[in-house]
Length: 98
Image 1 (tube, one colour):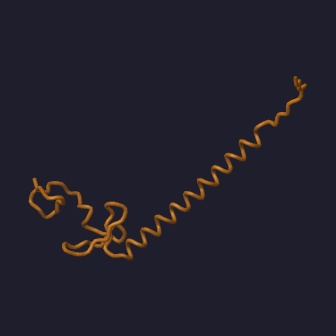
Image 2 (tube, rainbow, N blue to C red):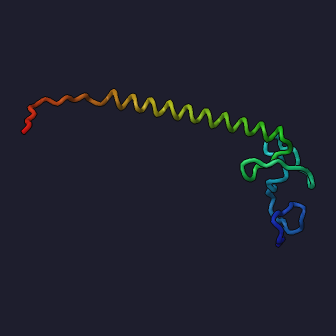
Image 3 (cartoon, rainbow, N blue to C red):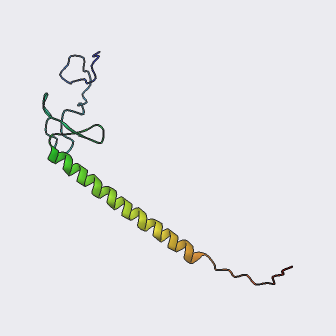
């Protein structure tokens, strides 16, 4: 077994058909050549260029913003349901002060 950190599919002890995560750009699937720049994002997501990486960042930010907005509106609707279904109570009685 290879003692290196990365295991390239071209080595003789690679017996599986899985591709290595650094072989292709996550977005456009362009092959990432050996000895070329690889732009990483969120840990182990490789991109062939700054443009591909930026496109993925913008996509992720839009998705997160959409999720936050929908989550916020869901919480508001739950709060409105709870406040409209609760009965309003008023206390009547005698207060004695000594």
